[in-house]
Image (cartoon, rainbow, N blue to C red; front, top):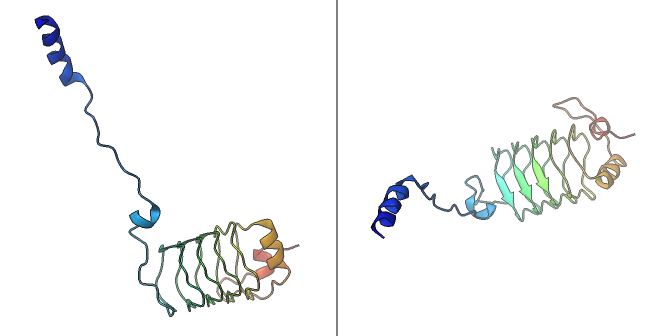
Length: 162
């Protein structure tokens, strides 16, 4: 029994150290970039890379806001004013833009899967390299017009309308 105990005492220091388990929390809880102070008037604000998760922003004024790289997951932006907003590299999954004013907005390289734009005003909006569901893209093409004043790209060309 003593030799077995001696062997165990020698081998124990060779055992790998056990690392503590890391808990994974919901994005809503772990985000350090999540904007907590939502106000109906946020026009012209620097909101780059902010996270809006399940945010209710219906009717909010975000015109001229810098939202580059922001994340809108399952958010409500119905009737919001996003005219001339910078939305390049935005991720907006399952977000509602119904009736929103998107005139002159730049959505270049945006990920807009499962997002909806029913009755949104899109004159002069730039969707260059944006990823949209095909039915939404076709619906947007049906009413696309104008040229973006900052990028010089026509809305129809940016949506790859035929």
